[in-house]
Image (cartoon, rainbow, N blue to C red; front, top):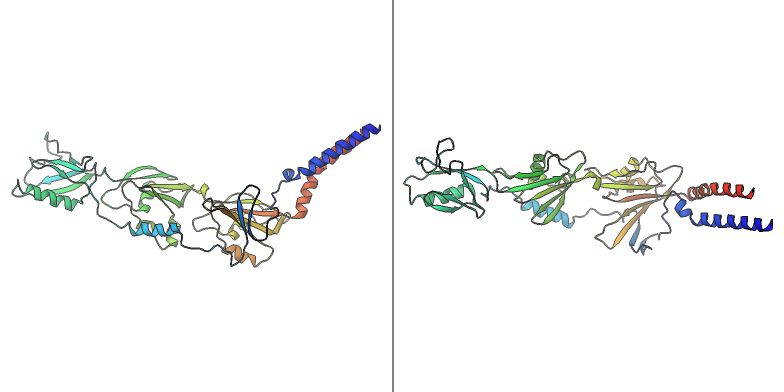
Length: 366
């Protein structure tokens, strides 16, 4: 009988120790742990964190970044320019008074130039009497003047009428969250960034028009329609060049993640006009009145380009903190977390242990 009691006590002891030591995994809520009040520290996972209490002095300032300077440079170098003839374009050239040399398309003729003069991959066209003549890189008026000067050696009244009938040379590409991705031609009318997205059918319902990547000659420019307006710029000031590509990202890449003791746990999308901490609290139905520790509200902001991750924390027990929350602008992939109260954490531990105590009572009755 004594041995049976000893075995039962041993079993109960092991069970209690395992439950108590495993309470962190049983606990349904996360824990902020022992963070320093401010300053840098290295966590067990090897990541360096910088803890800052949120106040007027520590609010992240809105400064002009390198990306912004790149955008200003991009706009400055993207003025309207005359279209330049490109390889692959088809030119219509008519010599008034010489229909045998350049017959019209409607004429019944076996002349190979009836359908136009293609610009080859070297940028030349083959023209009667004068042979190969450079066309690519020239505007239509420039090419017309060059052609006329060469024809004067053979024709008394040379007056070539030149126009582009098929634009095949200069192209740009649009993909991502648009209704019609693909390849588009740049015609004689300059195409702005805004026009390019419109030509692709506009952004889809899940597309983020404030998260666009323009690639030009291997360099990416991250921009958005709203952010450009905030800089005093416009998407209509950025004109596309041959080979440009545009990618419209999904809204899923532009969210804030909410964890911990909130009324509603779900990612919050950042709209075009931006999102601050106060808005996120509202979208998440506020802090859970029964479980949240309002004195421990954290924003974790990670940036792989830097050697550390920022952790901002604010005491939302005071109404004056709402002003700070209204000024704190959220960034994509920010994590907002609020700790549970000590009583809540203890209640969860007790709730996890209750099934085990029932099991112990059952065993003790054996």
